[in-house]
Length: 74
Image (cartoon, rainbow, N blue to C red; front, top):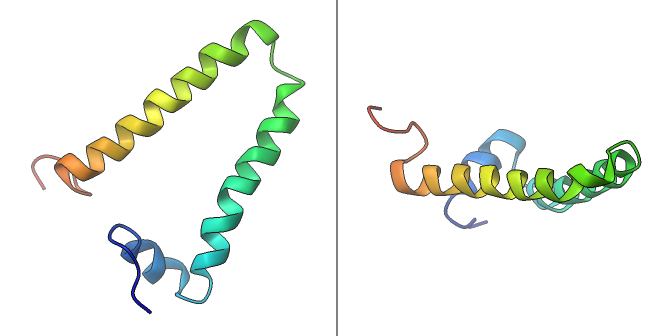
């Protein structure tokens, strides 16, 4: 089965048969953990932590596509 660019490493790590389940259930688990932790976080920190999470996540994605998996110097 042909997988899109960037998923090849994940496919080799988990196997091609498990790949769709990993891709589907990872956001589901993150969502469930978020709903559980939402009750324990002070309400004034929810938005700042969410924005921080998006900034870090997008930065990591851009880092990977701009510099490659090893980053500069590798």
